[in-house]
Length: 386
Image 1 (cartoon, rainbow, N blue to C red):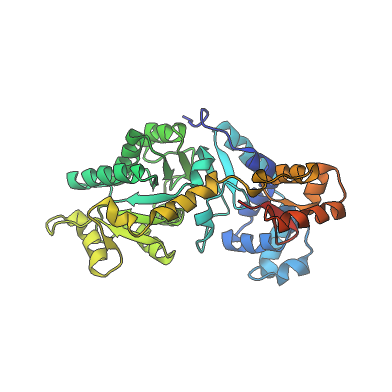
Image 2: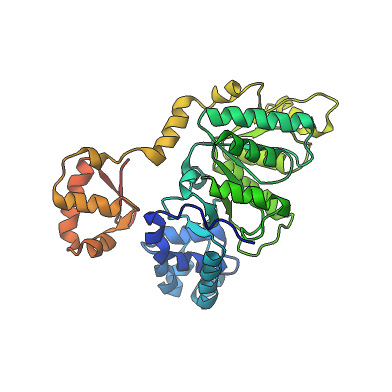
């Protein structure tokens, strides 16, 4: 089975970045390199393909690389597998978002260990909408399900996106309540995006993706739902949101891991209290008791910690009009801004796109910087402001 073919396609931003996609996938295949070292490598180059053209001594001098990993990078030659992954991704109706893409969740970039790339089915624009994680036990009580639905419905009315893990119990209730309320929800998987788990939630995943939400996974296609994947997955659930709401949880389990991840990421944690007789709520009461989460009785308790202006500012990162569109610019300035509208570009790429000399463009880019339309980032890359 496959779903997501009727979803909104990636915008032009990701299409432009596709020329770097092979290198991102290749780096993810290099043995023992890991996401953090890949990001260190990416910081040293203007284009990802330059990493595979570095000489050994340059690679070895990069923090965290050393001779063993330098050899692994230089000896990588499995480009056929890279192309196979791209082919399989397209066949399954998924798309790949890389750390460099405009669609990559801005909040997720802030955590200690964000994924370098992940697979997506659905609408990439939902990734940067302000969101709250709603999590809880798979063995939810009627009380837990009721509270998941109630809080989710109210959060949706407040303009927040709901992020959860597609599991049975609280996760499913939160996703379903979001869809029923006409809101947007994101499901983060602990398996490959072509291997929905639990399988009975395949239809729910399909509805999420096709209703303007998204289903995402950092795990390669074909990955089985191994137990070790879910704690890793949970850092994404908390990392791409403004806060995590724990509906119902025992002392151990994924919900407690997600709450701990949120605390580590300096995000808010909200907790629904439970009666002493509810064993499935012991974890919630424990979080409240040790001051690790705020006891919430209504959605207003959550919104007090996430003021409306923060939600609006987060939403503006998606919907705000760029500064240049409000100004009267000359033709060249407009052409530059239109080229940068979809994604940041290196000065050489910009010059190639506009068929102009770099030194001519730099003068005009300086003018645009002074007008607060454009800013220069590391490595002579330029991006729009706003």
